[in-house]
Image (cartoon, rainbow, N blue to C red; front, top):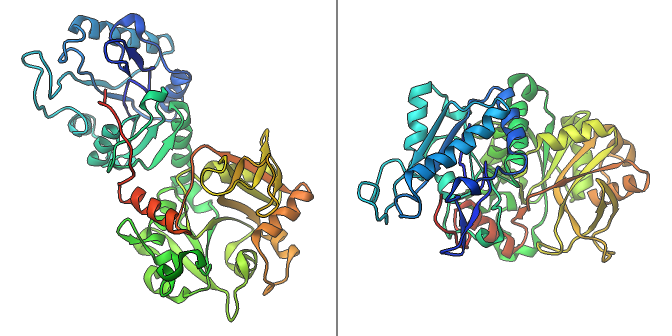
Length: 441
């Protein structure tokens, strides 16, 4: 487990000379981030070796002495020692390209985004990089991890002044609120990708039968799932994402131009999945009807994913919550506040109170995230095979009967169902979302 330091393990602090937040300049300013020690303990108990990899250029910039930097590191080690947490190694780059101290200024081979320290750890500790993670709060951390061949999580900035991101930066596989949340993601992915768990994970139904009317001519001759996004058909991103999380069985519920999806995806082996198909037939069945027809392929319980959604939240915690709920279905929700489409869910204290795509109320601050869980017997009892209906109708009926569980996710969704959403998702997967970030620490 490779971890950045400032903004991940400890809080960023205000530099009074620049008005920016970054690494502490003195030991007295060092403060661990909330939940950091508990997260590190959980990672160690799960068998992860811990490695710190951090750019620390303040001596090179003339802002701090080497003695002060050593004192800051000692504060970290003291905090770790109190709870018995051991790191396998600490790697610091002290250089900076615009440094003012001789011997520490100019280009170097160890400063992130270079993967120098990660590769050094690989060779020194015989690490399998495909099983490793890089957790950081800056684009340089993610670039470093990707270059070394490890999985990546970016944690949210711990101060509003450093929220914006640079244009064209590489995106992490997952995003987290903080190290504690990142640890939940890592342990969930590790659990779902273990051989024993992965074999028992449910089928994921992908609803890919929509007519794409909002896209007009863009989807006149292609189903949405095959629209080019980030340089390849969209469904390729969905399937690879499922396989990376251990969900390796998918059923594509297809309608409009659906045979083209089958021609491209085939049996799914190129994407690490086993893919089967269920077709609407002579007339569209709607999202609910398509799932009802596919039930013989879906099993007793399954996940359902909209065919135009790109979701970055881990699926394993969602499935586990559904299994624990004992209810007929589960809807994931995101606190949207009308930012990405109109919010359509009232959600409070872990429960869905109201869901309606048309009769919206001011209390609707959440939105259907695009991922659900359903028990096959409940869907089979609700409608006959071949009946046309919308999945939203099924959810609303379950809600009235107290049979719809809720699960709130923290990260936003991306979609390709509208021209604006398609452009944004293409920019995301192509690495081109706009913004601005400061110097990485």
